[in-house]
Image (cartoon, rainbow, N blue to C red; front, side, top):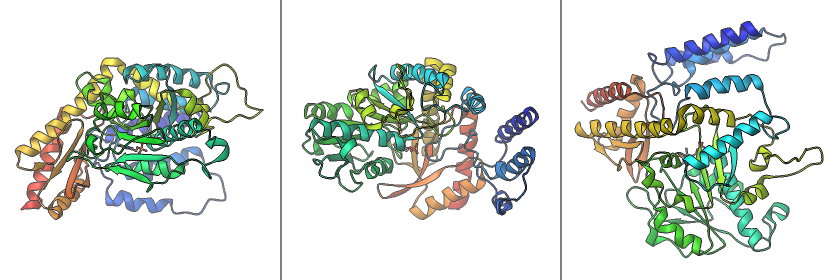
Amino acid sequence: MERLLQSTAARAIDYLATLENRAVAPSAAALAGLSRLDESLPDESTSAEAVITLLDEVGSPATVASAGSRFFGFVVGGSLPAALAANWLAGAWDQNAGISVLSPIAAKLEEVAIGWLLDVLHLPAGAGVGFVTCATQANFAGLAAARHALLARQGWDVEAQGLFGAPPIRVVVGEEVHVSVLKALMMIGLGRERVIKVPVDGQGRMKPEALPALDEQTILCLQAGNVNTGSFDPASAIIHQAKAAGAWVHVDAAFGLWAAATPRYMHLVEGIGEADSWATDAHKWLNVPYDSGLVFVRDPKHLRAAMAVNAAYLVDGDRRDPTHYTPDFSRRARGVEVWAALRSLGRSGLSDLIERTCQHARRFADGLGAAGYQILNDVVLNQVLVSFGDAETTRRVIAAIQADGTCWCGGTVWQDKTAMRISVSSWATTAEDVEQSLDAMLQVAATVRA
Ligand SMILES: *Cc1c(COP(=O)(O)O)cnc(C)c1O
């Protein structure tokens, strides 16, 4: 065991060291090499050493180097050193974090991390928090809490009786709602098409004047951080009337919530703290390893009502049992990395991470703009949308940038315009990485356009 873990750690360290110089996207040869895995289940056992050798030889080259410093696709963070190392140690611990009696340390780290998160993200003290896999699950859990609260108010016990015969719930979203909110609505029986969509402006922000009348049977889903533009729904212009009408306000803030952690960008989340529930990711901007999302619910009793079950064999002590706040029962101790990331960054390190990545995005926009390419969004956060000409040219430039391998960016269609998306979300990205990537982008674009 000891030799195996030492050699595996050495392999992992080597892997991370190669990220600096390898192409971000895996090579054709590496992808072809995946066919080595097409074998039937062996009859005989294989040594762990041989299994890890195969995994490293075939697997490592076929990864996308999203843990490196020049991956700007989707919204993908890397892993902070302390978070990755904590993940390794927690792997050895192999704790079941569902109930505190099974892992006092996992339960304790969640409690400590919850206090820090509510503080640094300016969310209400005492909110209920669940450590889930991703923002999709966080939206699911937050909306399940909303469903509980709205129906309980009308005397309907949705956890016991389901939705058959229940009073209707209205769901209002922006036209730019993220698909994960629709997926969550689909999973909790509210229906992904049974929504009222509010028109948005050129940045994807809900138009407050277009909001329908809200009431206490309505869930209003706001967005903090549009996946394309990085823009925020104008919460302060909306939230007071929503709350006054008795509506439940849920915020999909998968990455935008982290703007609250820095004075420079805090204005973007103004008003959001007044909501009832929030979903965010830790594996995006907090830079912990996958998978890690967080749900926050102002009144913890609604989240507990939607998530908790009890059985006689479960010890129900005085302590907070993590499973009462999440869809999962048994699960890994993902609070460990959240704690480690926050503990290592501190308040100023977190603020610096957010500001630095936003500045890098600004530099990309300035550099591409100066070269004559059109920036399609107001670069308010860490997201940049750039057009290299018509749709076909832009698509060809994106493909060529991906093939070049210096960095990686994806494509999108933003309000009918084809664009390349740049998202700077990793702690590891330096100013040099940005210059190197910008040079590569400009060179590739010039070649394609010629
Ligand atoms: C990324 C993202 C999600 C989904 O996050 P997952 O962690 O992939 O489930 C939801 N909403 C927004 C705005 C996002 O950016």
